[in-house]
Structure formats: C-alpha cells, structure tokens
Length: 412
Image (tube, rainbow, N blue to C red):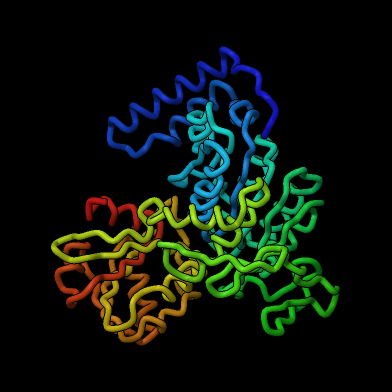
C-alpha cells in the first residue's frame, strides 16, 4: 500500500468541493454525470489536484484503443478482494474525469483508472502508478489521435524509467515496442484479432513476419517476448503453468483476453487468479455495453464498437443469421469526425442478417454496405428500425455517441 498521505490543503479541499458542486449542477440540468465539468472546475482551482488525490492510493492505469473500460471494471472487481477501490467506472478517462473519480475515493486503497491513450504519459507522471496495463493499439479517431506508431513512441518515452509494473500484451507489436522501455514488464499472451495496424516493425520499419501466433522482424530481430501469462481458450495460464477457468457473463473472446490481463494485474497485488476470476463473474455489463433491454416489446442487445478492431470483435459475438442487426454511426467530437475507417471494416461478415442503418452518418455507412453487397434499410430512427426488423432479439452495434443516443432512447 502507498505511504500515508498528507491531509489535503485548504486549496485542494476547496477545489474538490467546487468540483462536486459543479458536477451536481450539471446532473440537475440533465447534462450527464457531471464528472468532466466537475473535474475541470477542480483542476482550474488546483492544477496539481490529480497528484494530491492519488498520493494515498496504489494506482493502476489501464490504456488501450479497445477494451480499456471493461478491463478497468474487471480489475476493480478483482482488487476489491484486497481492499476498497475507487475507479472511473463510467469511462470518463481524461484528466478532468479521472480527477472527479479520485475525489470520491478518500477511503480507498486502490485507484483503478482508465486513461485515454493520448493522456497516458501525463496521468502516469501525476499519479505515480504501481501498475500500468497496456492492451492494444489500433487506428481510432484519425482526426484527433496520433498515428498508432507515433502514439506507441509517446508511450515508450513516457514509460522510460517508470517504477510501475507494466502488464502488457505480448501479441501486439506496438504494445511490446511501447512497453519495452520499462524496466519491469509482465507479458501476457492476450491475442490480437485485428492485425492491420501491426504489419511493419515499430522499431525499424521493416516488415514483420507472422508465423502462427508468433511475430518477428527479419531485419532488426525485434520479436514477440515470451509471455508469463496466457489466454488459452476458456482458461488463464499463470506463470507456474496452472490453468484457471474463466467464467464471465460478458460475451466474446476479447473479454476473455481482458480477464487474462486483469488476472495478471490482480496477482501483482497479491490477489490469486482463482479469487480474481471468480470476482470478475459479477460483471454483467459495463456502462450499458452488452445490456439486453426491452424496447417496443422487443429485446435488444446493446453493443459498442468504435473502430475497425472493435467492429471485428463485435461481429464475432452476435447471434448468427437471420438475427436482425441495427447499425448506428455518428461522427461527433467524441467519435472523431473522420469516417474513413468504415472502409477498413469487413462488413461482409454480416451477410444473411437483416440490417437497419441509423445515425448522423447513416448515408456514409449505407454506401459502405452497398459496396459490400449487403441488403439493408436506411431508417430515420430506432423506433422505425425496431418496427421493421423481423422477429427475434435484435443486435444493436453503435459507435460512441450513437450508442449513448440509443441508450437514452430505449430507456437504459
């Protein structure tokens, strides 16, 4: 456990109080949880507040393009076996949202924090984490985030000399490149379904060879490290070779990979894999993701997919044809305004599904589906899409703000 913290200064206390008041006003006005505006107000009054709030915690940071919200939740559940946890469970993952979350954790022992990829180095500098989990890097929000190789380089620079234990995915070359500057890395074989951002060597720019699950650069020798933890089907293999069963209520291979990484993180803090994995079973949904809701007397499962890697994983867990599917895409600030990523998604995997298309950028998506040779209907809203969908549970796949719009409409 971290050393005893000094009491918050009057300035810090004022900042926390003002932030909570701003958040309460935002909630009362119906503008969401208020965590972001609350954090912004607090940081304006005390720019060093994030570090002050973290000083009594064992901080664990989680960053990735995909899976960080779910993995943060799984780690938090596992670590509750060892003590109280504070976490930004709703995914407000920039400094303001993180500050708001930690402001409510004065009695916690652990701080399990999801961090936006762009802010990882800065948040790590402010919070002095004991552990950092790195899951994957792939193209996302091309108008806002750096190219993936540049982002990996920033992570690599930020982790140089870090005292944190870095728990990193050995199957993603970009993650391995970023983590390799750290003196203390635990490698996890978590898999990599989406490989289209990882064919060139991040070290020298050469072409990576990918024999089976392995990868290596023939030019400079940069290669996949030997993992000490591994996902193997429905089991997590620990460093001693013991196999621990994964029982999750969350669907799909990607969530088993998230559980494997989470078990490795929990073990860093003395929580045995069996205990950690049993606690992860409690997680049924994460910020509405995977929820099954009833709307207009129809069951709908809500699935979030924000980028090509996320869509690929989501296609693998939906029910088979002729299950109806609703797709919704926006391109607002939180999504990234560039929709060119739609052309990187293999939508032919939806062949045989009745498809309805929604969202601000439904026509962009419609053009993409037409090129893919799929049958679909463009709908004005969720009400129309549900009304014309054939019987059966409807799978709903949406990117970030489209997902939030749908949650509000269907009452979840």
